[in-house]
Amino acid sequence: MNSEVGILGAGGWGTALAIALAHNHHDVTLWEFNPKIKAQLEATRENSVFLPGISIPEDIKITQDLTVAVQDKAFVVIALPSHVIRSVAEKCQPILSDQCILVSGSKGLENMTWKRISEILLESLPNLTPDRVVVLSGPSHAEELARKRPTVIVAASEGDISSREVQKLFMSPFFRIYTSDDVIGVELGGALKNVIAIAAGIIDGLELGDNLKAALINRGLVEITRLGTALNANSMTFAGLSGMGDLIVTCTSRHSRNRFVGEEIARGKGLRQILKEMVMVAEGVRTTQSALDLSLHHKIDMPITTEVFHVLFEDKSPRQAVSDLMTRTAKAEDWG
Image (tube, rainbow, N blue to C red):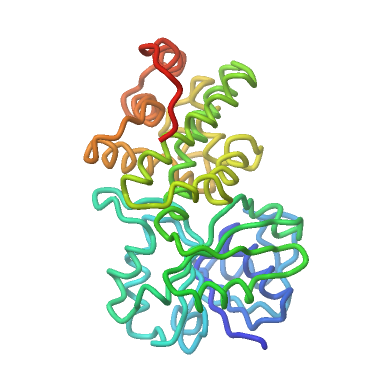
């Protein structure tokens, strides 16, 4: 059965999800707030900035009108940068159906509040209930999904019916969806891996090799698991698609914008310059601040995250940060 779906955010990920849903013959409306970009997308049927060379199917409607994208939709997918989600969600309150399932495809933590995306949505939309919020996360670069290369992710919700509905909505021969009831773990895995990916980029930029990068991925997962379990996530979630799976792809792929930030910093560029030159949003930069704040609040040891913060925001030498991690007090290997 075909469903009416609104997608908020016509960046790379929102466009890729729209293409995946159109493949399944759903009625898809893609919302872009910028009128010039909206006009360009309609005229060329191509997202030339984020997904050059990939055609947007003609049956995907593109709008700048939030009401058109949201009203009477069975599903609304959030594919926006984390820092604008609260303001956009508040605008959706009067027009969102009480039966609508809200799907979060965004990854990050809100600065100052340390809230996960699902928490922001529930706070901003008083009529929304947790069982109607589904979180999508896992190893999934838009550049590959949009080209219909096989991609596997997880849909997490407190509502089993909602997660299975979203699973059915997206499933195709090139897009496999598993379900989970660990919303906290799936969201934290998707957010915190971006911090570790910045560190991975620093290793690449300094040309320190595969041995250290493999160790970073492993010890980064330990940090993610420590904080996640302190926040009531299931530790096993971090061994899954939204944990280890997403961490591997974000730390190793040429498509990773967070890894790119670390690489550029290691090569001598300043953070402000890097972000100014980037078209896409590197969520790991903001998330680093929130992750460090959370770790201090809960007294969780996160040395990699701490060093990434020092490099990003206190101009610490990337090479010195690596040295300080390597020369920490000797200890037994631990997990969590």
